[in-house]
Each structure stands twice: as structure tokens, then as C-alpha cells.
Image: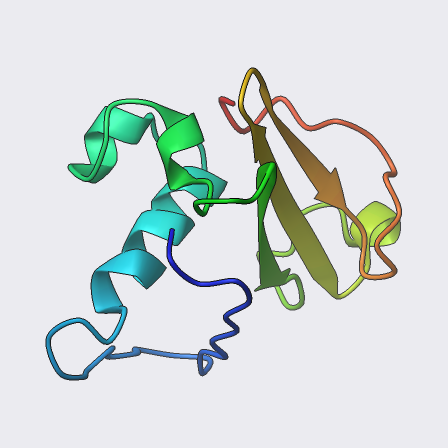
Length: 114
């Protein structure tokens, strides 16, 4: 991807991503898809994950913070109020981890297919 560091903060309900052509709307969507386990081809942008690494960089990291509070919270006693999904991509491998609200690795969750 062409962004070295990009942060988007979403609201609690419906969110719309708007902007001019080339402003990064599709990049945000592709990053979310990759973070949650989509194959590169499913993003309709490239055929391999390594193509998401910015030119000149050795790896890419995508982090998504998910609010984990309320009735539908997932293991709040383990993860706390926020779950961090982190996807790391290098030239030869990719990995995904779930972290608690402090950025620690409490355990691996079989709920996601990475």
C-alpha cells in the first residue's frame, strides 16, 4: 500500500468513507479485509499479500482495534474493553495475532481464519 502510516477512527455505528479519487477509500477497505483474513485476490487489488508492502519497505503491519464491551463482548475477562487484530506481512510470510487492550498476547483465537 502507498501509505506509510494511516489511522482512521470510526464511530460506534454506521460509518461512511468519502473522499476524492485517489484519497485512500479503497485502501482502507482493503486493509480491513486483509486484517480480518481475506486472501489478497479477494481484495481485487493484487494476487499476493506481499504486494501490499510499500515499495522500499520490508514488511507491512495492519492493526485494527475492535470495541469489546457490552452484551456481545468476546471473552472480556481475557481481552478487556478492546481487542487488537494485528496482521504482519513480509516478503515470505504473514501472521495474525489477537492482542488485549494493552497490546499483550493473551491467547490465539480459532474464530478467525488466517
